[in-house]
Length: 331
Ligand code: SAM
Ligand code: SF4
Image (tube, rainbow, N blue to C red):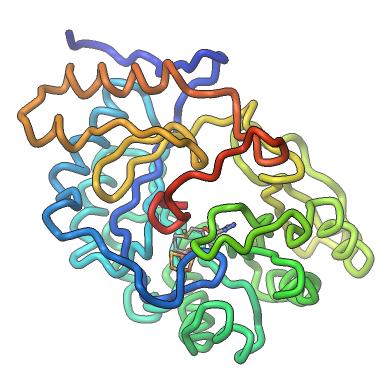
């Protein structure tokens, strides 16, 4: 079977438009809410998809299923060697191409990434305090990340967004300071509710700072007005009433947005996931390496999307933590 584009529609009528591709499980940081301090076992190189394999899967999603957005993630995508080569291949598909990165090496690479065709960039930054940064990421790299943000702005990424995971007792006293940072740099800060995908298993509901509290704390200092509904994007957004930009919150735990989800995920070793919190995966790599043709790949993808669940159950007793952590799935 071949021919025109046909939508990938799940049992709840949601159309898949966005593919998140993890290009590596490795990382140069060890964020406490993501990885253990040591002892991560990396995938052997042979198990990680090659650029050609990633491109083939991406092309299928774009040309056969009408996916129009691709985000590269990891692990830390910038630790994958020759990343610009992959970006060139994916940019040629004509999609909205984005990347999420910890920003530590962007000072040197932002312009090359932009020139290769990367359109948008999200940089993770949870604190502006050097010692706290070193505690939360287990790396003393705050200055490099700040320089990376400046380099991304200078390279012309539009927009540059900052991802800030908020964990009660760790960095929630910096919500307003982070919002102010965004206003001053002209970047949108998106606060992310802490999710149960940490390697240490220390996640607990009382460590989550919910969207309402985040917005209240910011609005008490910088008045806000909510912007129109988000559509399929994960962030709810607010505008500063004084015109100094926007701020977002990704309320995965307190206000799940599964009903509008248009995302699917490919892990670094070629497992296909229909949800960040999925407990099952489909093995695309085996098909890719057993000379399965595109129809066979498409059939496996359609079967998985055909079984996509309504949503995660974080707040219910039925919730089962995925066996993988955020860095292994690709956040
Ligand atoms: N290494 C890159 C980075 O940190 O931006 C990309 C991968 S990281 C897994 C993607 C995003 O997930 C980051 O913004 C990170 O802060 C976020 N993240 C990781 N663990 C999380 C958790 N337990 N809860 C909420 N967000 C988390
Ligand atoms: Fe690495 Fe990103 Fe996980 Fe931090 S959040 S340990 S930077 S993958």
